[in-house]
Length: 248
Image (cartoon, rainbow, N blue to C red):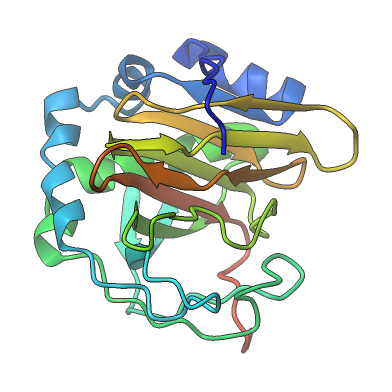
């Protein structure tokens, strides 16, 4: 369990693309996220209570009860954020050795969350950033609300270990962190020896990952006191279509 914490290497919003090109990942603090997305932090914080209403993840193969989540899918192109019919989340075993190869039907993101003005604006901003990084095109977007808690005494943000997601861009927003220690973020070169470790702690700070170039994980959390939790919003963007066990 990590006891020391290292500050994230945050960059200014106008340096995000250059940093992603240079090293495959970039970290933005909350003010930079607000500037990049043109969303006031008060609007983003209005989404936070929805993390208190996430149903349990019933697909954990390690038998744990520490993860709750909701899921939604979109096609983002330019200024358009188009919801698609609720669908299973699916990854090949190549990218998720623990939970890959299975259709996981998570409960959808709540209608009141989707209807909040900050929700589509955040997805639109990520689509614009991904188009700057990879070229303008439609982006097939999956949004996951996660709560990792200490129900079992320990919670595992990434039970599959260090991994890629099989997409073009991953955005991991730290939404809330209460009464826990651990949860250190680790990013490694996918084809090299270099890596970095730090702890996201500021609400609405974000880790951006060029998924083809880096692998990532978060270490387990333990309670400080009686109980605790770590809430994140993970958004993935992929060119060409969603990952699906029936690509046709």
